[in-house]
Amino acid sequence: MTNRIVNIADYRLTMETLRREGYLYLVDMVGIDRGDRLGVIVYISQAEHADNIIAIETYADSRENPSLPTISDLWAVANVYEREVYDFFGIRFEGHPDLRRIFLRSDWRGYPLRKDYDETNPIPTTPEDFVDDFDEDDYVVNFGPQHPAMHGVLHLRVALNGEIVTKIDPNFGYIHRGIEKMCESYTYPQILHLTDRLDYLSATMNRHAFCMAVEQGLQIEVPRRAQYIRTITDELSRIASHLLGWGCMAMDMGSITAFVYGMRDREKILDIFEESGGGRMFPALCTIGGLTQDVHPNFQHRIAEFVPYMRKMLREHHLLFTHNPISEGRMRGVGQLLRKDAISLGITGPSGRASGWRNDLRKSAPYGAYADADFEEVIRNGGDCYDRYLIRLDEIEQSLRIIEQLNDKLPEGAVIEKPKPVVKLPEGDFFARTEASRGQFGVHISSDGSSHPTRVKFRSPCMPLVGGLKHVAIDTKISDLIMLGASFDYVIPCIDR
Image: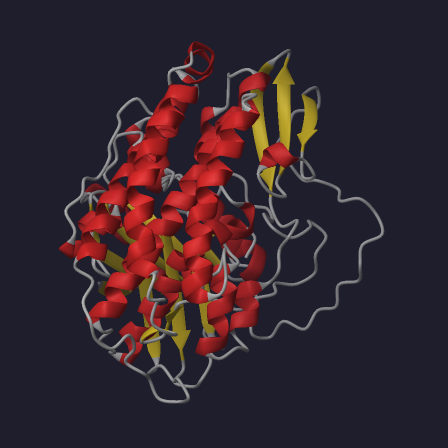
């Protein structure tokens, strides 16, 4: 990864130049408070060369009234990233089309991730006065935040013209737990359990990414057996997540049977996790340097039984729902997302690959034991609900291929290279990513050399997905809105960090 510190006067021109040179994917934007100055670190890469990342670091001239030029016209995903930085650091982005808070209430005082934050905000006793860009004569209805079809505590304010959606304004922050702020007072091993609870359906991948970032700083070489087991558990988590996503999407279209079948098959994976890690959703096997413990002696045997069972069930799932004429009619041609828009919006994972964008880190920037497995990156080109539905079932088959190969040649040996009792990263910034169930999950760590970080930023793959919903739902019918959200398969606690 290449790091560049640029002057604020050169920031905009630098970003325009990189955009012209083919850096079409804005990976993440991290707000930074160095004590004497406020700024951002922007991670960008070429669309299909994920290992070629450039980190651009720049700072505002004034701490009292910080501002930077916007880049939201260059990358669509910067629209929400800049709003997030403004919300928590108070940096204004000149030229941003819609700069307002995105997580906190509009009447919130202060910027919580600044080092000098000492504001007191009493518990509000009045409803929030929303600041939005709806016209006075727009007919606005509320979806969520308390509604099971929102797939989490998400609030959508939707403008309608009859049955047609004309505008969507997502509101986050209803379950904001301040995890990134908490990380600043936690030690590195203590942070691990927080990562599990972001996208709780990708818990093993989230934890894996954080461990990789810390191991990068400590220059630890993880034992080969641990790498294999990490990769196998990640792929088991991916299958469990896709089964739940498949079942929920089918249920949102009226098929409760599909949901029950998905949960039934998912239970077999959770049983494997429970036996080896103690936890079902959060097996907590991955730790800094390797694994907390070796897997149960039954681990390989149970996986060898699960793989053919799941292949059989996949065929049944397709027979049950995929080729049903009603489900095909509901999904085909609905909510189309073009490849160029997926890249600009930062929509990675299955939803991006359903639009023809090759963005799988397991292929373009292999980590763990992925380089030792033969599998395909599943790509579809329609970019509609049907492709986003199918690609998750296709990816389950590829995950089974990975698991089967690694399970057959699981090496013997140690499962951890233990760090020192007190983990201290050297001074600097560290960044690592994994391919989670919903896209690229990233971890940025800023360290001053002590036993706890000065800044941790998690790159949520789900935040751009809600941005994609806002993009594709316009001019569709309100009856399709819930199905569109299910096709992106976002998890809201991953966004509300």
